[in-house]
Length: 123
Image (cartoon, rainbow, N blue to C red; front, side, top):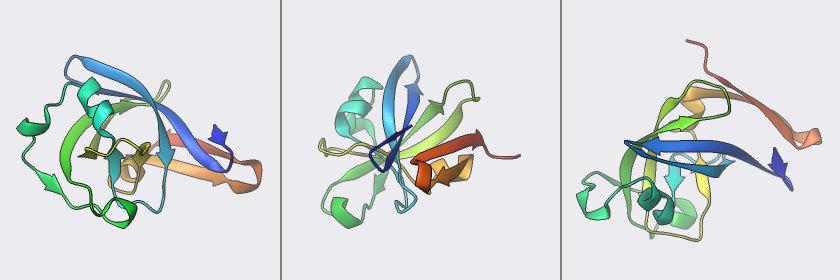
């Protein structure tokens, strides 16, 4: 499931009656999950209605972001509630980061094989 040496994961994001399949970058160095503007629109979010701001860092430090909660489903695993920093930036992928993708899912990377395995966290 890796493209080059980057780990991308097919995941379906849902909010209310909207759903969209995306390819999310598994980023252990990212503090938060990040969603580009167009994906948020596909999920029915309205920028002006979101009131909780999120401060981004790194390459996205100059971009405004707002918190949104969606359901994320990977293959046959049960869906999990995921919190995203929804940004108006478009030139970024969906980023799956420490808060809260890696708190909901266990991921085992096999770097030499450019592969990974994923499971829902043990409850």
